[in-house]
Length: 228
Image (tube, rainbow, N blue to C red; front, side, top):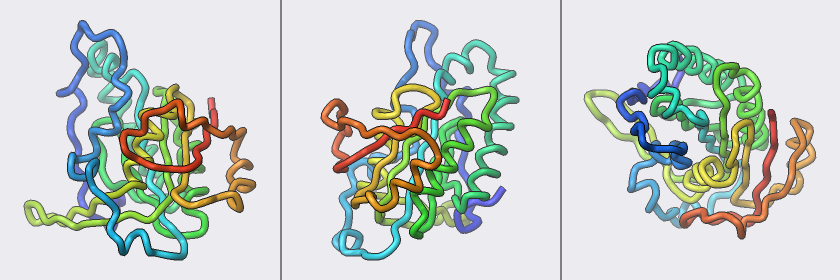
């Protein structure tokens, strides 16, 4: 499996975090567990805000109802999860994306700066949703500049990303996409000139952001694409 700059991928076994039997609904914030508290509270550096030129994009994916699946049938879930990891890895690579990290079935995927990073990210999201036959997915995407840091743990270099773009992508998944088979996406800067190409991927509608609590993430416009 290729990873961002070929760094190692940390995994946490979802089976260790299954929903308690008395819980009746799926936690809508699953992908946010991929973010540390430092990431959630990080403010973009002045250098990040001043950057010009092509921007990167960040993607968060999550399997709807996976906690209950783990509780009901952990053996089957583990088998399906292995196939899901292979699917995400393959489609990410084909669309110029790099897996940053994963917790169980939730993925954080980075798309390097380019004029097509948002298109590539949305295309990746659509292909993963359609390619995954065992799960129903929610996906959040945001394009924009972000800060990055490299950590060295146990002789392994790990790269991670911080800032409004990262938090907005997470909120697109956990708050705006709402239901499975849906991609919610945005950009920190205007993307009117990119929308025609993105709309070629599927029916796209504008989102009324006043209906959602993005928990500190700030974007001006957002969109949804219902894939299945």
